[in-house]
Image (tube, rainbow, N blue to C red; front, side):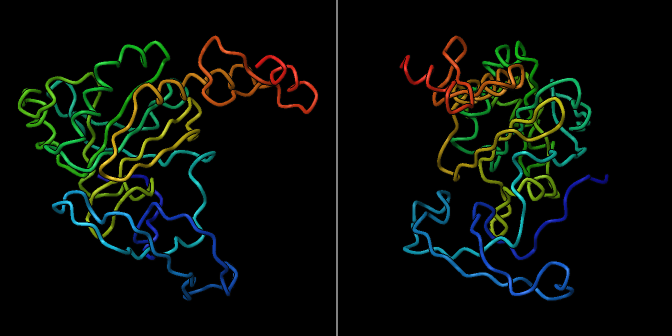
Length: 261
């Protein structure tokens, strides 16, 4: 099975790092040379799965010249998945021109924060469906692991039946193409992407492993995206929800919004 993904950047070790740096050679002159960047330190935990041990400093390698995913076409893929306790094929581009897509990554099956997120999205699937949106969950686990987890009761840490597919990324190609793979651990960070009907990534968030995501905020952001796409002469201010006042992106017209708050 061939996945249509962007080639991984082999110099990058930690996908969350987006620092700018100066390359000594231009891309055209680069040839076989590698871009050189500074190293940065961060006091974040290396892994919450390591018994709570924290590292006083963590070394990051600068990502060399990658474009941001937001505003660019979503990397396409085709992969095996589990849905309705059966194995199916999912191809992302099949949704293009038809639906919005919430694509979210999680680290591992049979863990702790992950089932709370996965079941929360499933329980509120109808709200996304009304917004013409499909949800796709992805981890590096096999479809057999996904199936076993779905067949496990929620009270025992399982998922029960879900209303959307869980995709298997055993090759890690999808995680790499969306820049969420932790290379030295072989698992994905909690990345979430909102892809519009044209197949363009319009929103992304990436949480570290110990922090779960909000279905409420995902819905709100999706609603704001759909509003501005339907009303291209307007923008949504902070915390905007359907029914709230929007804003005109104009120095004079925007004063109407500020005068009303």
